[in-house]
Amino acid sequence: MSNRNDFPEGFLWGAATASFQIEGATTEGGRGPSIWDTFAKTPGKVLGGDTGDPADDHYHRYADDVALMSQLNLGAYRFSIAWPRIIPEGTGAVNQEGIDFYDRLVDTLLAAGIQPWATLYHWDLPQPLEDAGGWPHRDTAYRFRDYAQVVADALGDRVSNWMTVNEPWCSAFLGYQNGHHAPGHKDDAAALAAAHHLLLGHGLATEAIRSTGRPARVGLAHNQAVIRPHGPSAADARAARRADGVRNRIFTDPLLKGRYPADVIEDLAHISDFSFLVDGDLEITSAPMDFLGINYYTPEFVAASAKGLDPALVSGEGGAWLGAEPEEVHVSQGLPVTHMGWEIDPTGMYDVIMRLAGESGGIDLYVTENGCAFEDTVTEDGEVNDTERIAYYEGHLRAAKEAVEAGAPLRGYFAWSLLDNFEWAWGYSRRFGLVHVDYETQKRTVKDSGHWYAELAKTGSFPQR
Ligand code: IFM
Image (cartoon, rainbow, N blue to C red; front, side, top):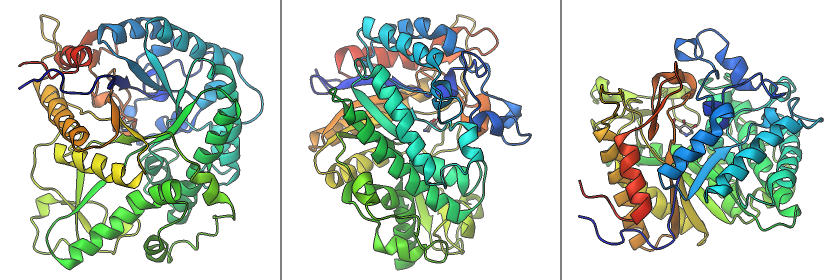
């Protein structure tokens, strides 16, 4: 049932994308190479050998894409800025053509009455910085600060909502620990150093943005995992505590409490002595944020061991899963899954919002990503009848509404994603968009879920179905 209004007045409705996933034009406009260009061109790393071209050719079609956002009644658009477009070498010379592109994008958004929400780092590290050591190397955090300063100086007169880093867990652990993402390294200690330097970079970038003296709200988009023990045993509870430590608290404690959790330091002592932590760093990482972004897709269940479990339900990387005891595993609950194989459970969204509402001291929260991939096709009538995606969104937004009613300071929601796009190691095979993209012709087709979301964004009430 729909009530007028299901969401509070002023609740912000948006959609999100990221530079590498949509822009294409990877060698145009003075852009330098990023780690994702290199990784995607390495045989066997990305499904089907897909690369950042053509993506959605958004670099050339941004004005049409903003028109689509207006059609969807979006109040805000979360996009990321490609560091290699702004400072192609990662450090040093600034590429004015790159700044001009985001200038045009921001101006077009503002002219359409859509708030620009900019993310500074959504995984496209300039390759020269990786060659110099990447995120495990402390200097990268300072280069990130310099880049943030350039962007804040250029756009800060019009952009007032900033996210420094998107999902630092992915950059650190998928990038440097299990190698599923660029730059594709497998080095546990390097991953921990990378995690710390991403947080340090966040804090330094926050200072840089604020140093402009312009009105700015700064946060970060965190993919806090919802970790649940598979069974009621003490051993499963211990496994869940360890996983929560290395997935969540290793980020939220330095950000929100200015410390690393003692149990995590102990769990990881065989990997690192945390000597990357320098006096004063934790004051920088814990500079008060104006808001926290939450990216949520699916919950994770963990068990102390696979013994006695249906092998078809057990996954995960056992001992290679950082911080885990050798036998610890992820366990599927047999719930319906999306095309990513991710289980659908909106209660996880409620739990993550409520937990972070409790831990973040009352700052505003936004869901900065939530959405799902399904195998969409365009009908002969030119429609995409993605009923499963509508059900996913409705389930998760009802959970968000419950969290608001329970008192969480949740102020807005960004669907992932505006457009079908380059889904990292899955290439173009996984479609998350509210808008379908035919990559051959670049034709955009608003999916049924896009029409549904547009109505919700317009009225603040769930559409009748
Ligand atoms: O596509 C990604 C996005 O770049 C970061 N968060 C998760 C999404 C779906 O995997």
